[in-house]
Image (cartoon, rainbow, N blue to C red; front, side):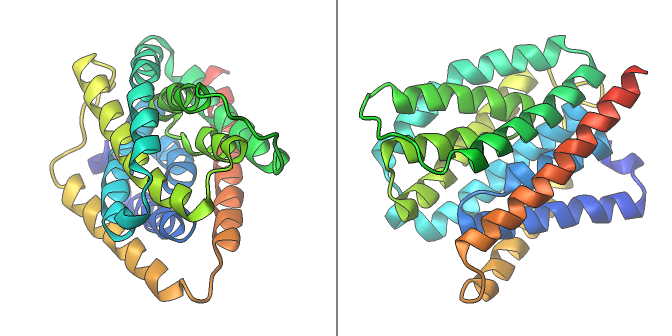
Length: 253
């Protein structure tokens, strides 16, 4: 797993976590979109998404501490509760699918999610109470299989007219819970791949990188708007998603 990577690959993985954490602090999203394609390319689709889930757990908790007063706990709780069945289904898909197909699926899901996020700036106002639970279930599925729950949440925020600051803050406990849910379910169901869980030293390393990213974001907050941070996250995610698809296709040939 990580111990088999070259120093260059380790630096690339660390940079992805650092940049993703900074973008998430600035815009509310970023870790899953940026980190998933990079780690899945370096570690393979199963181990890469598993480590991404661990990163989002740490980053969501860390960032939540600084924005907790703005969190809409009722809405966040609805989303998290609804994410469980989607996460179970996602763990089963990870367990059943061949690695190359899973790699392609991750890349395609990232690209589709980005397209939906960019192509749907204005959506009708939905007052149906089912909107949040549906988004939670879809987010749980996407997070467990591909590490990218953010687009589902962005779309439901636009449908429900969720105020941006409260939404960005509420994403942090949602991402934290979904990430933890995915790690636990995949571990219990044996969907962690042949490599199993990451070595013990990964956790303190991830915590240090996330804190570093949050620190960088704090220094840049007055100069980088959330919109610019979100745009950069989308560009990086698009490049990574395309590379993941190419690697998966080459693996089938």
